[in-house]
Length: 222
Image (cartoon, rainbow, N blue to C red; front, side, top):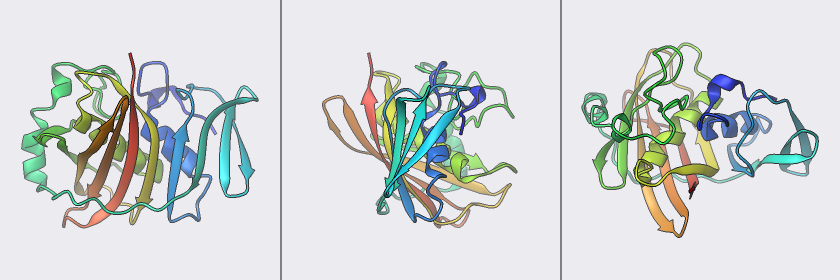
């Protein structure tokens, strides 16, 4: 297992959603998986995977614990989806265009070229609620769905004002969307507790069917 350099979040570590989705792939039979990131995931570094009962542990450099994964239960969020056209309009107001703590992020970095990054730009529907359009690429995968769910949740916290990174993410994928389909991802802030922010994210298909949902904890950094 390895997180290639192009899948960064912060410039020198893996995007949280992509990393968590990659780790979750070690539990292919679980209906939903929770992944906890123990350190910023190193890039271009081979990971070893160890199974302990129902828990998967991922190590770098032999003994450095990077992440843990285990089966989970993930309930739907009550956020109301916007249409794809509305998401396109909302995305034009993406706060990350003006201020972004990680402008080269694989998912939401405006400095990534089309075709290189996912270029998902979550604008604000209301306080604590974001929406972004997503045209599903030909190489869509479960790890990419985790990534697509990741950053819209972070921007629901307001990471342009106080940077946060992903600490834990639990995701349930109902269906992988068809390549080329016009989807919408919504982020929803659930609450704050000190340095922790709790968010939900939902991937809606073209007919507003829930295709995937996640619950995540983000951690404020200095």
